[in-house]
Image 1 (cartoon, rainbow, N blue to C red):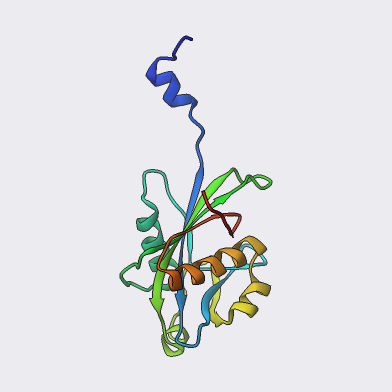
Image 2 (cartoon, helix red, strand yellow):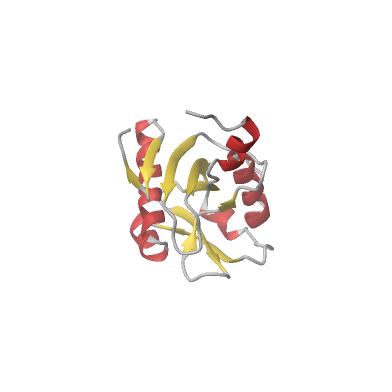
Length: 162
């Protein structure tokens, strides 16, 4: 078997997109969602990981851009494999713990990012109706991971055992 020169091998490797989100919740178990201006479904704060950027740095950057919140990032809760979907290539979504927020803190958020229309705290049931099904499952997996003290490995938000 002939091996490719290292440079050709490296150039042939598949590239994956990556996103990083942060799960904030309040003492009543509601989760913080952002209403975006560019699509009909809501999201958790976060976004695309830039080239050369670590997912945890992307999570901190996105929260600062979207919510103007500057808080320490908690532990990793979810790694989710996302299949290709229309124009979006296969990817990985990371969800980190943002910790607890109060309703007063959320009410004080004045998003200046043009991508964000509004923010709000929603029960998991209400969130399930506002976000895409895969994100609803990812949020549920993240909430379960908080209780279990483990990282949830998922495929389209569904927990898997490797």
